[in-house]
Image 1: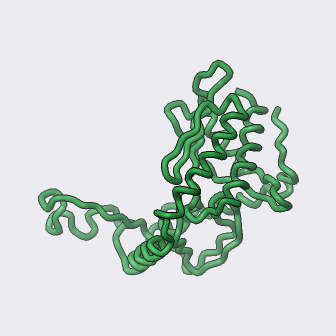
Image 2 (image 1 turned 90 degrees about the vertical axis):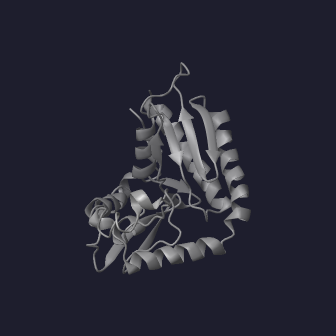
Image 3 (image 1 turned 180 degrees about the horizontal axis):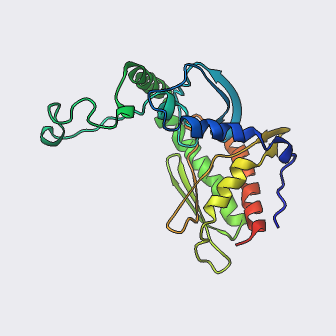
Length: 239
């Protein structure tokens, strides 16, 4: 049986239950968003912080966040280039797609503000350093743990591929890693944190990370420390 190095985890175990309930409750609400939404916890990269907003519009939401903004309270937006013959205005008319994803002024305003924010951040200059620093931290875990068979990444998207003692893909190891990250607290510099992870890979052997673009080098250090503990706990659980 695994002993979770939780630093007081169970006393705080109910903290994420509310977040998951919110996620399930509003996942398919679409246009029927609440007039006021109180989110007790939202993932900022790998950090949980408090927030209370009328309608949560996260102007720099990334995949690693609990995206309660564009996905629910505001309909998702995207831009697609296509020829006129399959997707002209007379063919692909308003309401042609699922109604929950129809465009509206609030969603458009949020998209424009998101673009303004991203253009003002000069990501082209700042992200290469952060990406290299993040990957360097993952490589240290690769050297430390034999189960970490490979680490790779592009931009701010990263994979940690896990292998068993025979060197074969550690089947379905990603899901328990996600649980260890989300359901248990990890102490760092006197505060408690959790990590939002994704799993993937052909055999479910990959931990996928997508930190938000404004993450700092100090936050990356914290991320690597916590991920180290998650991998250690995963090893203790066994194959």
